[in-house]
Length: 328
Image 1 (cartoon, one colour):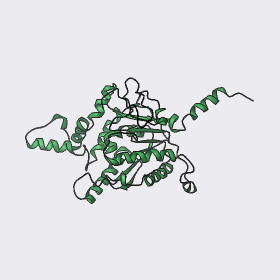
Image 2 (cartoon, helix red, strand yellow):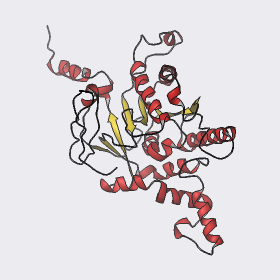
Image 3 (spheres, helix red, strand yellow):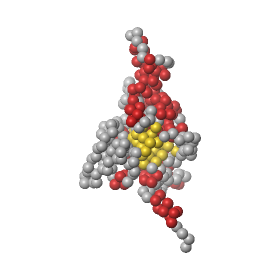
Image 4 (cartoon, one colour):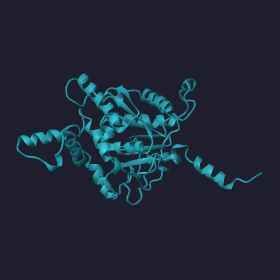
């Protein structure tokens, strides 16, 4: 999406949007609690060492090519910086791909586990809902399963589609996002599904979320993914059944060779040709975004940090007490 100064004034009598600060994209309607999030644009760069060791990331995607196309860079960066990461896919991907529904389901399942393997996820969870039919599924059921996983895995950080994204025609995307949003909120309490605690689980108070939207979005964080772009490209290359990656580069190389032609871009073995093709064409949006901010490759997000997700204001109270409390 190009930089723009765009505002939607009101929705059903609610307050309109404040524009994002200079250099950031502006947003769409946000509920009052969300509007409190800082809209100042921040560029997140690599951190040396393992600064996030001990933290847990849940990357949630409806389909096995969603994260590779849109938010695998930030996930790979977090894994490099010490996160233990888990990949959760909500659908069975039975529609996109050749063959029968069963053929496509199985092929995409294999691809999804390959995405998790090449990116370094500790484990992959498949929830198995029917592809393109998640709006026919009880969001309460999806939410309950996610709450269980967030508590079981002790998740600190989430990356997924933006709950408040507009103009996305795929119901799997926005149903997944809405289930995640409500689950991360409820997972931190003790009165939703208390039987979890009898099983030894504890509330999961998620501190950070990275939300990606394909349409207009409030963007307050740009993530530099230059150091992990090859990992992101590889995650898309192993999506052989669907998406703009797979073996398109090597296939194009063979087609051109049959005509007595070649592209210097596609020299080397088949995997090298596939990766080069993906970086040049499928991930062009990441290169274009990066150049806008003086980076080689980048991804964009609506980021929520601890001040919002940990209780809207408790951090301010704690810091005030620390600075002003005196002996009785």
